[in-house]
Image (cartoon, rainbow, N blue to C red; front, top):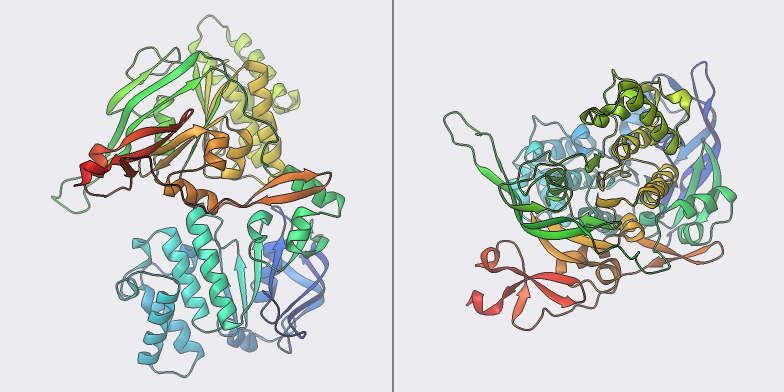
Length: 585
């Protein structure tokens, strides 16, 4: 978007923020945003980007204070402004959308009441006018039934819906400046793109200036005009967003972009023919608790009629949105869930009834909650070896220490505890625990989703190293298609418990067939190395491919679709879930 005026709406000059009695967190920061401009603050955890956003809103924690510099907004110096001026500006002239909408929404008040409160507080309009404007704004953020949502409570809706409510509420006052702090980080790719598209469309229409705060530079390249990159509270690069991403100038940004997952230059790795796991017609059903006294509980089919195999040395990725069944599938292979029907077969299993032996291990997304805080690291890593009764306790601990060293944690870490580690170090411990028993297959459930880019790169490289050293196979579960494109040999796409497409990585990413797969790819910006220190964005094709003759693409809820749906091969190893046309007559 092109700024409409040369006069800055927001001007930050020489801003320094420090902990009371401590060192500076943000140092001598300066940037400005013109009217209608979308600017971004980017950095890894601890870079100070969120602190800057809160300083603009004058919502710093009591432990922090602005020690130097100014923040000018529409003629006001926000650092010096009194509380009354800030109350008048916040919510009316300056709006804010945060990462977790449920923190900002009151669960005991209806969506409509909360939206109207903000309008009535800041504008001299009637309740009827406020209600009409709120309903109009809900419609503009593409809420399908605005009146029902207006009268309902936030807790009844998904994270994506709640973020839409927040966006509608904040923009209903038509602010001059919107601060959006990681507004879509916790959302699935498709929902994230929808909300970002809607937000940009609305702020363009309203002429609102936006400060986007994020760690995701690839996503920002689609939306922001300029980007300011922070490291340790200082600016390391500033300029056009795409230039920073695709042609980084500073050493830090070159390292940052080099650490991003990228499209591989070569074809996928040839796996051995030996089949480690064969999954056939797998169903996993859970019972749900009653929602009222004397009511009966229901059932949820988390995985429905899924079939696939994993070969030795192969990385098979499972992708899909939250609730698609991908984690349930992984936990079932690892023996943490029971299959309702279907078979799990192959050398990794004792029998065909889902009972796993230590030849399958798991790396979890939340490394903090999956590691016992009362055990030393060497004891945590040695735990899987307790099933091997041929080893003494000393031998188990020695193997554990060796595994910790292999994942890059020296001997001095062996007696440490989980709370002493960073997120990346905890994930290394999780990987060490998974590989110490020399399994054939590791189920890695979102192993890098909670990590910064540089730490994510270290963990991905470590997983590749472990694969090379031990000949491991991975079932790699992720919602991040850029990571999957780099690491996977084959890709399984799940949607509402069903496998809707499966095939080699190149086929899925270059020639996707199912509409859901295409939507996933279109919602995920990916980059690849062009030459030297320059990169290019991967833009997915929007050309639609017809289903094979005699079939239509499967969609959940279609008439007779579920029972008749079948995986149809359309290319070498490439299958897509379709429904016979004749079956719908």
